[in-house]
Length: 163
Image (cartoon, rainbow, N blue to C red):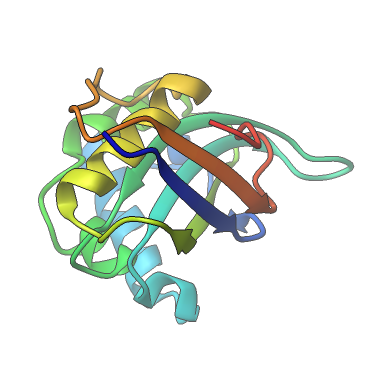
């Protein structure tokens, strides 16, 4: 098996809103998808990884990892807005982080020494989940593709630099 090395560059935090301003998880999910659907940042048009974070960025960044996902084969916007996936995870955000500020960071793969595939992205995601402990991700298992070494660059905090 080959060692898989990947470099992911993360964006600055994108402020969303406090989930608790909506009185049901369905309204929260609808508003989240609408907000992301209207965001014209080119980052949302790419495929890659995304992380939802809770906490504050002012006066200093104090964020915790809530949910990590990927959008292999579609844009991040499409993955979150149009597909029906992540409903359980988004309900978890609503239930557990109602009164927290919600942010998102986008991670774009800059280097990869292996051919991209959904299975590879699932393994990279699982490696990120296993090393960063997001509270709303489902448990995952790595498949036998090889050892994965992830280096996060850019504004990766609170993710670990190396996963």
